[in-house]
Length: 406
Image (cartoon, rainbow, N blue to C red):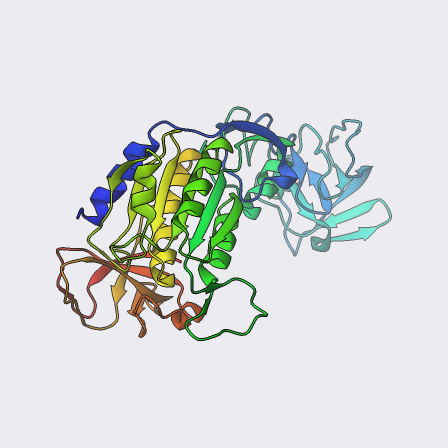
């Protein structure tokens, strides 16, 4: 039995430098995808000096003596609309230029005075104060400069990235291809059709539904098969077909422990797979298995208990796919535990937790009731996983723990 962190090291070595192919996609289709190259700004943004307000472009010397008691009136010499094709204007002394938000400012503009701060009478514009130099002018390159780093390879594109990318005029991105994953649910007790009433000894095949949803959420394409009978030959045949179809990763749940009907390791070895590890000092999920199929594909065997499967998906499957896509391995969040906690077994615990930000701005986490590996009710209110390291026997209230979002 190896430690949790040794298992992560073995996963990293097994994946090695294996990277998925790269494809070009429209930026509008990129949310959830992983960048395969660094992105640099192709242009200045703002692309030109422009007005941040509807108002009047002025030279400060013309307003240097203005006050509420001694207003100054300037002649409006021109009006500039917000358009991409603009005749450049210069400000003649003792005049101002009426300008719209987003319009190119005249070359010698020193400030913009908002329209609500002046009095307008025909072409006579009366000012009651002198603005600061540069007031309400958006400068060329103030947001982005040509060649400036924008996003780095390995970034997972979120909706928040679309605004700057499209502002820069970036229409297409190079991203890692979606990994193709085969998920195998095993167990004679499984019922996949949720509309079929359960008979004695049966349970719904929730692991398959969860796995498909979770894998899709992290950017994978998923095929799912069910072995709802203890048929070792069927499993062996599925392994052979998985290698022919060249899946990037094969994952199973169940039949991976040491029971009379736990055949995953036996059939993997019969198929010529190399077993890398087959037990982790982890709860839930001690009988985890990592193997390499003869074709070179990575195989992860997860326990059948639903929470153990969820933990394996979150910390092992996700890690494999993240590395294949060239993504960044995440760091944990540090949070204060809100109560004392005692651990019995010398295992690395991954616990269902609920994290909030306290009034003083500190993350606080509570370990929820219902930590058994068959109990999924806490998934309705949990938002994180709490780590209790193998060599840690207890936490006291207020002590910091490592937390990962669910």
